[in-house]
Image (tube, rainbow, N blue to C red; front, side, top):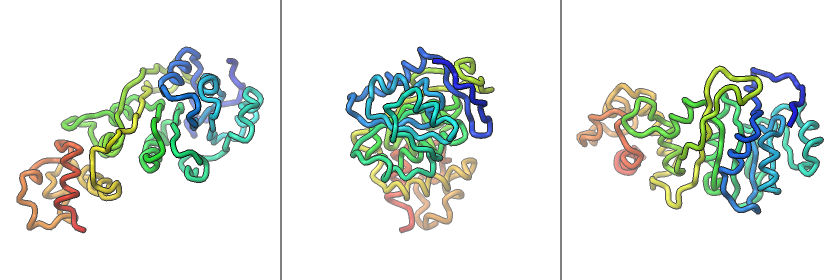
Length: 258
């Protein structure tokens, strides 16, 4: 597929995928029934869109750059009425997507990729899967395990509700223009049962406070959230990065001030 000739805007992270073989592999990674509604974030010039439409004819798309809407409609007239020009982080998914279950996919702009993950978590009852292109370091953080220096807020909140799988690495030369970093495609598959029983809001609250002071023990980091009289448990001698998701869940259940 030829490029649109539209000048890319670095400020909004426009690094369009140009590798057809990789686009085909990314579309295939969803592995869902063809009647599933799929929402593509940032279709750009439509390299991935082409392969998605071959598999998922009910495709919806959200594109921020209004210059690209006529380009996409010229190439894919079947998308008429199904491309929303907006910032994905401002889209009301409840209004946009009416189906009970759907999937999200995209070559995500780096600066909003973490925000997209949190959009997925917020709508986790309906988002069955997500396949996305991330900066490699971000993808590694999402998949990180306890004890790792990159294990943190995103690791816990994503893995509490989704299994994380690496699909492929993407070098800079598969994009136009090439970014200065390497990229990785990951897949999230919603767990049949979450790894936590705490509410998402309580879990997020305690995890954010703990990791905002990750060099401190939990006894010092969580002093304002938990009664000091309850901090005799050995768990408070440890740092945030040493706790599993289930242990954070136990903190919420047993110690968080209600």
